Image 1 (tube, rainbow, N blue to C red):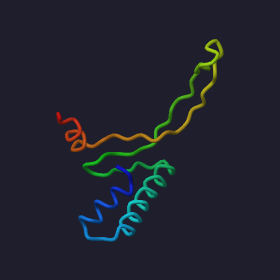
Image 2: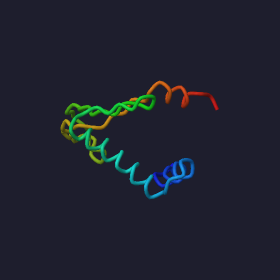
Image 3: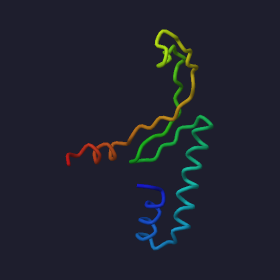
Length: 94
């Protein structure tokens, strides 16, 4: 599902304009990204938790020259842990 498809579904269900819904969705995503960039955790009840974690520096290998080691620096990456309700719905057998 794309952002546009999501906006259309919400718009039809809530009787709002697609433009207004799309702006709300985009602003929500912008605030989530902004919070993560500031190192904050974003918790959406019954959905999940977004947070930033740090990957340790490590040694990797160049796939074109396996004998050559490459230093991979530490970096911050976004992480998501689904909430209980989401897990239950996704894990339900087809």
